[in-house]
Image (cartoon, rainbow, N blue to C red; front, side, top):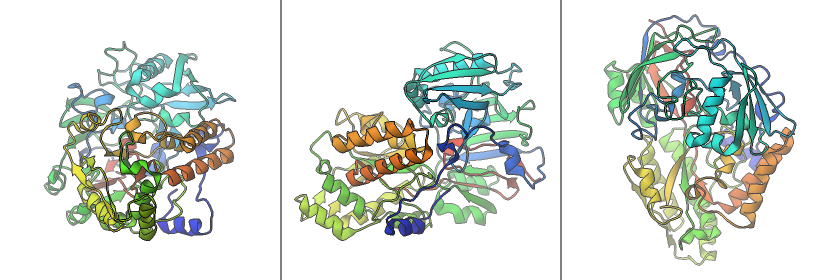
Amino acid sequence: MSVTRREFLTYAASGATVLTLSHLLDPTRALAASPDIVAGMIESQTPKSGGILTYGQTYPNWALGQSNRGQHPYFWLDLLTRSVWNGLTWVDEDMNVQLDLASSMAPSDDLTVWDIGLREGVMFHDGTEMTSEDVVSSLQFHMLGGVGLIRTQMKSVEPNGKYGVRVHLNGANAEFPHSLAEYRAMILKKNDVDTIGFDGIGTGPFKLVEIDNARQFRAVRNENYWMENGPYLDEVRGVLTMGNAAINGFRAGQLNAVFNIDPGQVGQFEDAGGRTHASASGDQFWLALPKNLDFPWNDKLIRQAMSLAIDRQKINRIIYNDPNGWTGNDTHMNGVNGEWVARPIERDVEKARALLAEAGYGEGVTLPAIAFCPSFPEEPRVYPIVAESLAEAGITLEFQERPCDGFNPYTEAVNKPYGRPKRSLVGPRNPFINLSRLTTGNPAERGAWEGPRADRYGSLLVEAVSQQDPEARQALYAEAQRIAQEEVPGIMLGGRRNMAAHAANVKNLRSHSQNWSSRFEYVWIDA
């Protein structure tokens, strides 16, 4: 469920917390019976089999180029790994976790052990059956570091019969099923550490037959796919399309779909006969504010002033044509999350100026430049709005564009140990993962936020994810968000939506708030 900005402000003005419950909040009931994914999407339709979907992708895998063997899900062309593989779970468009290769999931009373039942009769593309041995092998491989959430959360995994596994966690985690839905956390054929996954074999709806790691792939229908319905397409072909190549390829008929289109080109796609779909949310832009050097924003008052000065509603209006959309609440939480808590004040330039004066910058302040690379087409148009609105409050901030190739090494190469000030991309996830990003992982992402309030914030998250009671967990997450909003360890711009375009005869192709969770089983072409 998403909540509009107007609804946010109405609730905030009344002093209420904006909260909606997701079905995972009760881990003892959430995963008892997930609906058939395809059946739900094709209801009231009469799909036709056949046809080739050739889609363009403007957002390549960040790990592209780290391996010349792109048939591995870690190095897959564009993160949309579910064309070839499946995970144990999947996150749907409402950010609820659904069962995929898992047939059941049940936690122990203390939420530290999860028993996972596996679907029987699931065949890999080479005709061999998936069993617990494959799942154990896959999870152990992901624990080596390829899937950070699994590495940090899991202690061990063991088979529990032919069609079951038991996972032991490092601590209580009521939301663990979300971690199993990560785009790299695919189930692979059992193999040794050096070769697992590099055969390109999965259990997914399409079988990989050809890939150019830096440009395109081709996959054909898996006739033995385990779902009752789908897939309907004969082939899926993915092509990286940067810049205007996406709209030009669509106009020329070379592409019949494009993921992550430039929102400024919606009209052009529609003029070319296309249809567009915007997800409820998408990857967002987070301004990381490292505090390891003598930066002005080491003072909380400066960070508060920055947050109050940025005109996030203007970004929504101009860039996304979405004036009533959600705006960032200065955590990694996302407008599509039911556990969201809005900032109490949307924007207040005069208060921002007063905070600057209180911090000793009555004549204004110049901040360190923030580096970014244009991962999404519209990004270079976002930061002029940010800079202009900050300037209205007397804050000077330059945004420096860098090539995406080598961007992460560049930002980590200076100002050790936290790296250069930068913007980071943040994909929407469940509240524990979202909120934990301010306390764990790369220090550059959290900006080295320290002190009693940071300690309290971290303890709230540990307490929350250990809670069986959903309402208690909800209240703890709300308190944590209010602390972050008052401390402002970093700034979330928010409001961005992932968007896809497709030809009129392509049915059910959709953009997903989690870009990597897009699926192809229910897509069909009306010839």
